[in-house]
Image (cartoon, rainbow, N blue to C red; front, side):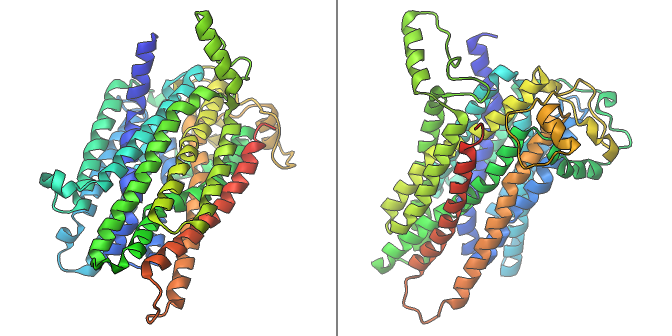
Length: 529
């Protein structure tokens, strides 16, 4: 395949992730403020975000299993991508027009919005699971790192677009799409997601599998889903370690993603309380200030996602072999310089987590919108690494152990006892990485370290996702308790500025995430050591 053809494949294969991130940034960046505007308390808004981990805990593993053995003519992944995209479009429409649909019934407005957010999270997780699996399916081992790097760039573009739209006065620019900011935002998000998914599904070819290969007859999806949660010990040690890192890393990331905009909005409200603006005006302008801060972070992340892959070598390569080829002396010299300056993916991951932890603790000294914008912008480096490095290492491990492109990955033969029959296309040889976790010397641990395990891409990515969504349970529950405590001790007669109180409470949650990120940085530093 020529370089131009490879580039076109990378772009079309990962474009839908950009559209998905655009939609997700609209939800995470503006969902909290939107629910607060409906009259919900902060402690209840935190519980709404339990939709994310609930959907991720069930949807991604289940969709991974079902798509592994899907026999549709479109392939294994695309039917789920298309169906879930339709669900996202419907939910976005309901969220944008909740008040119009519910009328003058405030309780119904809140319940309709909450239900839409829950269904939206389930659909988004379904798309994410299948798009990630599609990359592993289509690309061979040698191109997994480039594929995940392009995925991170597309996600960066989606973030930039989503937060830029939130900063602009969309009602003035696009009045034909809605009469409020949230209406125009949800409409634009639906259009962007649908169009990018259409491009990815049209240009990406999958090889359908037969019913005999899928082994679907007489199998229980619930039994297969249960097998996902009981097969962790069969994973290669390197993926186990990545799961442990992700557990701590995402305890830090979720408060940042869900409350970053709200944190800056609180600082804005505090600084402009005496300006004579109404509460609605303060919230609208504060939301734009928060959107601008997250936009700076998104631009920073996008820039780093382009630059950083040039100065890293993959988990499966050594520094001496990374990018060693060249057709001329000048090109060889440039590549030698890049190689000398490059670091391994795990080292890059560790540095990024440490920097993120420092940024979260910097909120101790942040009291202005400008300072908060700088702090959030500095997190762009860490976010670029977070959406690239772990998936790259996992993709290389899965694809490399199969000896072919991941489109030939089978389902787990060991799941037969649970009623889940494998795709009979060959075993995945999950060779051991150096090191081990714990002192378990059971047969499962022995195979994970020294033998092989027959797990499909969908199942492995599903297990990995469990360790991303569990932190959201923890952070949503903990932040809800903290916010409820603060609401309980707040006195109605207090002269303290509400915006300042709001920002301080969120900053505390962010710093707790910073502690978890520091732990993740330590574990990622030891990933291959």
